[in-house]
Length: 502
Image (cartoon, rainbow, N blue to C red):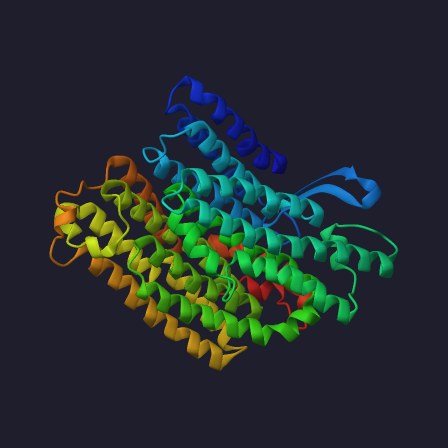
């Protein structure tokens, strides 16, 4: 079933490319059905998950290149399952957003979209580090084509900048992966890229620091962390709407997943030394991203810079490394993926109608498009952390857990909640309120497809905000399993303790 999670979008992309010969709408229909099947398979895996804690909910391994200790090793725990479900869910939303926007070479478009998602799922499932790197590259190349071919006016520049940042940092990660395998071979006599075997080996301190930095920089660029964030706004602004949803909602999560899964458990001693700096950079990202978001006049750039701020909370929670902060970081990943994906869907709908992203040429949209205004207001207040919604829960748990470790940085980070209210409500005011702008006279309201997609996303945020316990129960054992390898940062909890966490 784990291999099927990768093969479904991979083969589905090939079918979508062929389906263009059947008619212009057929590639989108194929992609939609493929991602519904992916979502259903993920739900089946959740439904069959055992209630007792354990390292993996499912595991599959096949020999691949045994001479170099490389295997096709896939494994699924609660953390990766939640992210796979998020990938499939936002993939469906991306197809819905692309239905009318993409008219040029739709078959090749949906092939790249589905292959990006296949690479992301592979990243979340691969626990052989060489295999992990291959999937890391697979998810980046199709995204380059999505931006470069179907993007907007400066798509070539944005796609090249995205590619250079991600490939340069990916090269650092590859060097670190090979170095990690070599150091493990020297200490244990076994050359392997298998994550469970590497976890069991203690690294020499000097080597651990340098190898860890290669992983950390690669994941920090993808997160993105200040000062490695400069590619994000250009890529988001120029990408088509569906690619923006995937980029913000899923690809950024691969960076956070790498920090939680690999960096801290593999290099706990080196991370303990890095934690104060990483915490400071997380706080800087929260505040700087919020200020940049408020300063924007381009609607998509404003939403893009808000992601820098929200991912700062994730970085803060990861390096606090206690159970509450990590649960908050995971919930923030889910909530940010849904809420920011919805804001990009709205921004794409506005741009498709008006052919502009300039908020100076917007205003008074509520008079023309009340459904768009109501949903825009909902996702704006979700982004700022309205109590009762999933975003609030994620940020609250991060701050609660981080305060126990670093009270002063956490207190400074909490001011980001105020700044989020400023830029989120400024977005609502500039776009939906005020005097109607003549340029937007007679703006069409959301159609049924757009309302359906945004409505499902809104319900998801409400349900996760009011009933988060199933997600916390699913991810709790996985988080504790990883925390036991980094007890130098925070001691692991007993099962009875993490099961009663808020």
